[in-house]
Amino acid sequence: MNRVRPLYWSIRRELWEHRALWIAPLAVEAFVLLAYFVTSFTLPHGVAVAKTGEQLRLPYAVAAGAVFMISFFVAVFYALGALHNDRRDRSLLFWKSLPVSDTTTVLAKAAIPLVVQPLIVLAIALAAQAIMLAWGTLVVAVGGESLSVYWSHLRLPLIWVLLPYGVAMNALWDLPFYGWLLLVSAWAKRATFIWAIGPWLALMLVEFMVLAGKDGGPIARVVGDRVFGGFDRAYNVAGQKNMTVTSLSQIDPMRFFGDPSFWAGLAVGAAFLAGCVWLRRRQDPL
Amino acid sequence: MAVIEARGLRKSFKTTIALDGVDLTIEPGRIVGLIGRNGAGKSTAMNAILGLAPSDGRLAVLGLDPWTQRDRLMREVSFIADVAVLPRWLRVSQALDYVAGVHPRFDRAKAEAFLDRTDLKRTSRVRELSKGMVTQLHLALVMAIDAKLLVLDEPTLGLDLLYRKAFYDSLLNDWFESDRAILVSTHQVEEIQHILTDVVFLNHGKVVLAASMEALEERYLEAMVGPDQAAAARALRPLHERQVFGRSILLFDGVPRAQLAAFGEVRAAGLADLFVALMGPVVRAETAA
Image 1: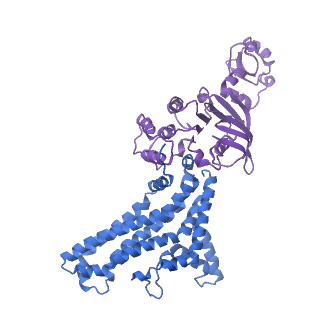
Image 2 (image 1 turned 60 degrees about the horizontal axis):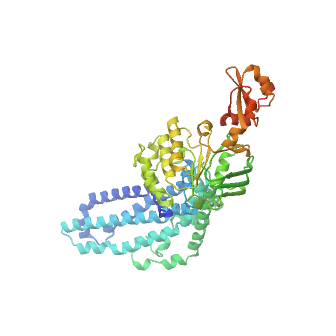
């Protein structure tokens, strides 16, 4: 008898099919690094005139932000196809001919945007920042400027705590968002993207008209919060103009977990995934 | 224990009744052909047996309820739908990795040995393979699974003759054993009739005929009759009649061989002819004359 690990291999399977999940962020990060190398001759001067160090930190922020952004788009399109593509190409029948439960399949597909993709983002961003640090240190040293000034302005220990924390909280926050996309991909016969955003756009449009053009109605606020709100909630940036995180004290998991809307989101997300399993069990190829 | 035990299996869709009280028993060691016209309910029956769709009535496959225990059932049931179902992006090596990773009864060495006898490269993707090669890959996976039941739904659709022959030869010689069963549906009846042990004819969701091949070969006989004998032969009420080179071939149900031998050459009816006789438009002796 083989030792079997259905969930593990189902996740591997997703990464075989959707190579963009890691190729796209790698490509973007390679581009960011290239731009950093090309412009790094200005580093010694930057260290010499640095006051707050914002300029010195910028490439590190870009390295994290760019890879996060591209991964967001890749994950959205992944989720919209995850329970749809194998119905369209009929390979659903092959997957269902193996001893893997529909629950395992759905959990593997949900794990991609909620667990695997955040880990990919972290790994690539942290690796890129490490490369930037090594190269930057070399350039600054060769340029004859103070390494201790350079390093202290970077605040890398802070970044390396903030980044994993923020990515993890955001992934938890995203459960209902990706749950919805997966549900649409399991249900819709075609045009999953339209079905995923259409109803919400329609609701927001109605709301916009009811409120006679004033923005910030409750529906628009909830939708925006659900899609982009994870990081906002993970850090306490209240009262700051540019919403930056500058100290560890702004890490605020109590606020994050104390928020009933987080737990409501988890419940709704779990219900969406249960819906995916229900649909998956009954589905024929398209 | 029977491999498949179905009693009063029913399934209806919005406007049609796909299965209308099907009884079916398949014992180990049998190779059963499920034969019917398009829309007769073959795929619906197979989907129910594989746990891909719910149905009404009693259904046990290897003692399990397919609809509620599909993943458990699939440890002991293999399934090839038709050549198109392997995903196009999958590599040969990935197919082996995946099945080995999820299937407790998969013998990877056996699958590798089978693949080594083909032209398939481990790095090839399904999209780069011909239909015949995709079937070889699927067959390599399925033959390496220690299953008790193999369900084949038009498995050789679109394949050339050599691939079709090799497909069934491999299954019979290297996979089939007395404790295993095969349920196969295909339109290429002539090609598989010599490997079948049993036949089930399905029409409009009902079992029209279920019998072993031996029983069929005794019960349904064809006599080749010259024009001078035709009227006398027709008096025995043949099920079906067709004309070949000016002679009549009449298909009889349950008329003793000795009695027919008086009219001319007698042989067991082929499955395809029997299918036409039982399902096709009825040609009465009077109108054919």
